[in-house]
Image (cartoon, rainbow, N blue to C red; front, side, top):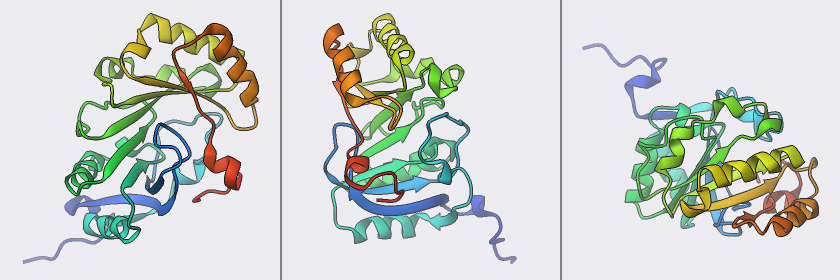
Length: 224
């Protein structure tokens, strides 16, 4: 009997990871909670303001049991599976399900360009809609909007007034605030948070504004 080829990770339960680390969640409704971040490698998008481009390539293969052991080592309740684009790896939903089975509070950060329908319903899906300044508006999978539930979150990362106006139009056109919590966030270093706050208040939008807590604390250093 021949042994499995170690160069063929599809033969085992593995995912390619860039890093696993524990930090404070900087975004979403879980902001401030100690969280283990499982960052998967690879992304089919190239957003103009992406702050995790180091996860586009490289990484290394991790067996599921090693991922779960590393998560457990940090002794926190919240786990965020992120990227890159985690759903670009076909076994990501399997990892999400196993994390839920172990009792973690699990969130998934996804670009919204791929189908979210196969994600375990216990997972809080944090879904991006890409505005014009991202350069990836055409990649938005609008079919995902009908799949959003109250425990999910929809995130708009905005670089300028044109992005904001586009987001408001999407909010109204698709009735997004009635589906789930909607988050507006300024692109770090391109849109002043106070300016975005003023626009939200002026329009009386039913959205939550957020800033990236981790960058306020530690700047742009990755892996905090």
